[in-house]
Length: 181
Image (cartoon, rainbow, N blue to C red):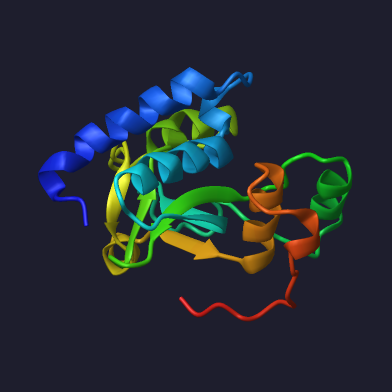
């Protein structure tokens, strides 16, 4: 377990690792790669870190008025035609990617600093407290703040193949299972 007082330095190291290796067009839309480099940094420090992928819902502070968005979301929908089209075209489907630290029951998302700008791009108004520059805490504390990180085995499999961390023939896609929140 990395102590709380050392986590900012670890996140800085992740940011340097990302900057040294990522050459894509928009780092704010690269959660897959942020998570990959975070795992590399954490594993060098002796931590077991796993890429997670699936649905993210992060509260934007809006009251539920029946028509305004209350959460900033990336929703993994494996059965949708758009998801199938994107996967067939070798494009990232709608989903979010983060890191699990299973031995500590924690998750790490170094991309929370981009959420407000991404919401603005989508025409959403963020009315609540700004997300932290990065989120690293126990999963139940994340849920208590109203954020939901819901991993899906198929999304994880796609992410691992996309970054070259799993050979295609080892990926097993499992049927949908209901997720309780």
